[in-house]
Length: 353
Image (cartoon, rainbow, N blue to C red; front, side, top):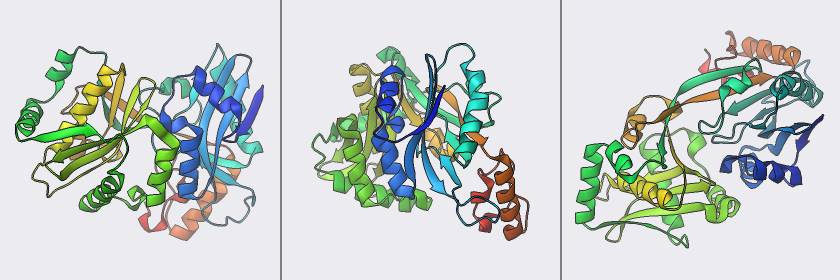
């Protein structure tokens, strides 16, 4: 058996991607980008036994503060932003092997905990049963692009169809910005939108991030722009990986006079994606995958949903317990259990319980 932490230049990483359906969140360059953003180290936990493989992209970080009694080498691991759940090509018995091999590897590498956002289109949580905890958070919306065009049209909310037709009459145009000439305009629009919705600070990616994102994803990332005359009414980044289209980031111009521009953008991408043979268009869910206004908006494009899960695993239970007790001492309240904020010792103390 092989158990290793691969660096982003290890050829085995791309060999796994060549064999197993994956998303752009699994790409080494994307993981590097995320590691740089949060101040961590990019890697992938790799386990191989005969002809079975497991690969989980991670960002390793030092503990948030010194923890008395815990090794100075201790780190924790989390998946990069998005949906980069584990890639598993398993034969009979391999999932049972993982139950011992993965925690043992984490203990040997002083990795206290592992937090992973599963990919709703690729991961079966059943495969992780008995290996840490899997927590369901809500649902995401996706479009099955293998359906007939007529069915895709029928599943689109009638008011959306009306709004889109009306925008066409008014001269609203949706198109790809192939050379990213309007990328700077998109970034400004994105920041403005995050301010409008009072987004958490984690969503305020700096400008260097956007530059590196384009470098990391190359031609797989598309910039779509909705224009009303010379005004950009909406714009978004969409990423194609194999048969999957991901709705990554977007912004809307509240002062454009076209409040429904995002509807036109999503329908445009849906129809393009189907025409190039993609199979799934993932829209995501509401904030935290909850059933909020954003989730309701996305449900206007499809009746299909998938549960969204996170996966949590403790590698060194003794050290993890020490960290939880230290957090509780500092916060003056009990730390969260496995199904709450994880890892519990990273919860901002101001939030308490």
